[in-house]
Length: 369
Image 1: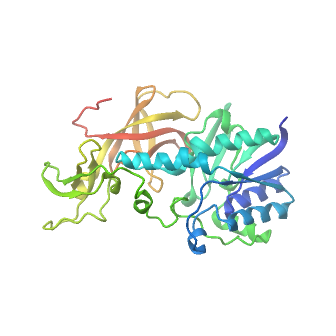
Image 2: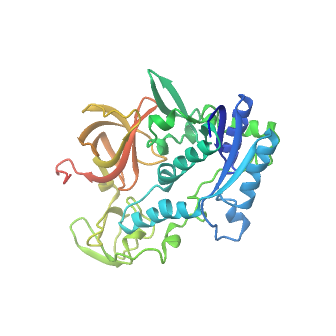
Image 3: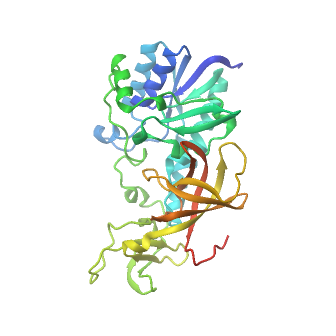
């Protein structure tokens, strides 16, 4: 179908952000078409648990009601199998390897945006929009993802895999508003879910306990908790139960100090524990690299790097190892650099690119890359 210039497909989860995204685009004169993706079969029967997640019937109804208010079509599509294969199975596989994944990034990169663009073309939509808290700018023939107005809600971190081809058709309307302003707009349109709480957990783990989710889904790699000298302290039931920087659940009799997970070896099964001071490193190696503008930057480039969703960006130097590996050296040591997590690079408020953390390198060591 030929795309209609002002027609936009809006991904609607039933939350207030995506609902207001649809409302704002309607106000701006776009022909809005709403779509809600069913991503997984929610096993929880308790409505309080369901409402902390997504994919409940209430969420679908909230999206439909919003479309009804602004006179828009609404579609519902089943993506359960694709979500399981591309997001949930990857999540399980990463923990199996002793890494800590970011499933929202996997969903955006491997499933959500590609599926939305395909559906947009089927429905003749020139653009797609989501409720992400981020902005898109266009200067010097280049599209850029920029931080949201409301820095406390900024989601640019999970959007570093977007390329120019996608960015030119993407709209992030709510990135120009604070959360309070977004809720006020929802109230203005008398949306019943204007005060719906923000989701805090991984959508398919609404109770927040990933270890319960992994039970029976991973083949445990068992091993030992060891100290930094290699001394064995006790056995453990599987490396999937640990993440870098973790303190909770590490109970070792006779230790009169706080200890944390410093390193996970997925071959031996050994988990190294240390005091907090040993968690600080200055250098990391990342792979699965994407540059927002499609061009590889220069070496020794000063950037700001962010190593987890709620972290603050830190000053660092970017160097290229090869086409798919980079090194990031921080000006000052940062705590608990975690393999499997994204590292996202910024120039001022714009996303330069990023990758997935592969390993940390002590300054005295050499990388095996």
